[in-house]
Image (tube, rainbow, N blue to C red; front, side, top):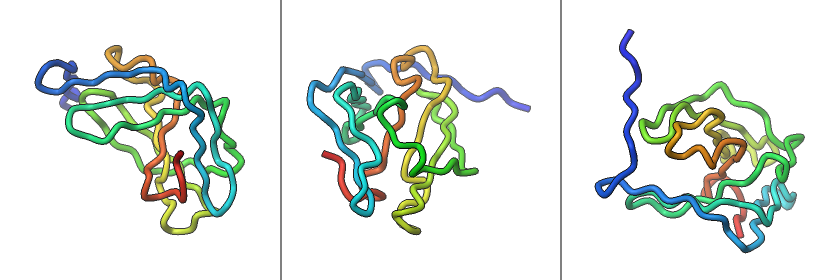
Length: 122
């Protein structure tokens, strides 16, 4: 079996992680799934910035662990969560790097949500 590649952020693929001073709220089907004043904003290369929310600020009674998994050479193994109250649209709506690569270690213990799979991220 071949080892998974590990890449480091750099000038060709920058990644920055900063504390977001604003309140971040995630809603699905009228319910608050997450609400935090301690979110981290991860900006990566040419992608839109993503809000990573601490697990303690997420209502995990509204999420269920998915069997879907992916791998990012910059961040590591990724696990996913469905938000059943959102229906089929909210399948694999949230993701987490539970043991991220050292370069992005600040996102350990955080979860992010796809904007198009929830009703609102503000």
